[in-house]
Image (cartoon, rainbow, N blue to C red; front, side, top):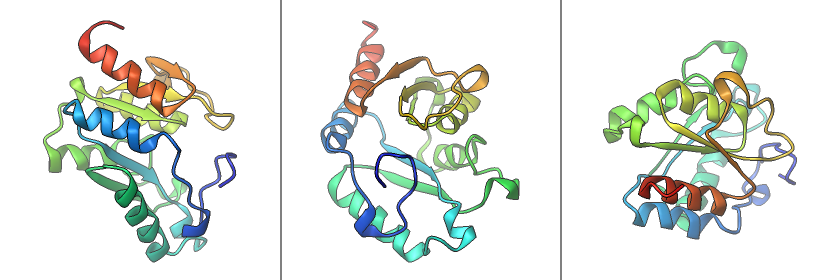
Amino acid sequence: MDGSGIAPWHVDQFKIMPDAHDAVKAVVDAGYLAIVVTNQPEITTGELDPAELNRMHDLLRQRVPVHAIYYCPHHKSDGCECHKPKPGLLEQAQREWDIDFTKSFMIGDRWRDIGAGNAVGCTGVLVERPYSGDCTGPCAPAHRVRTLGEAVAWVLQARSGSQ
């Protein structure tokens, strides 16, 4: 909500990063799918109404050219396969969008994002935040950046082989 890594519970708290539209448009224009995968355990705990989450996702779709949004409503203690760092959400997207993970990138701001991407063979790019967590071992990214725009620039350079 305030940059601390705490998820918003209401659409009026939901903020889209200033460079999100241009960054995502650049990867879409380069031929990539832009798919969002997100843990939303606050649904299970009752802190987040699914209808409110849908309003946030609708707002994101209006402002940023994403192809799809997948979310896990479970708490990490539920042991589901879709709660990142487990790769269930990515595997669902792969089935629905015919994704080749060896040619894909996972851009995220938490160790769980990178871990999920690494689990399926994506190249991980970490947008470093104070709350990113321990991004080492199986959650180590291929590259670290400060902004989404920098992440996209690195992805586009990596794709062209000039990283």
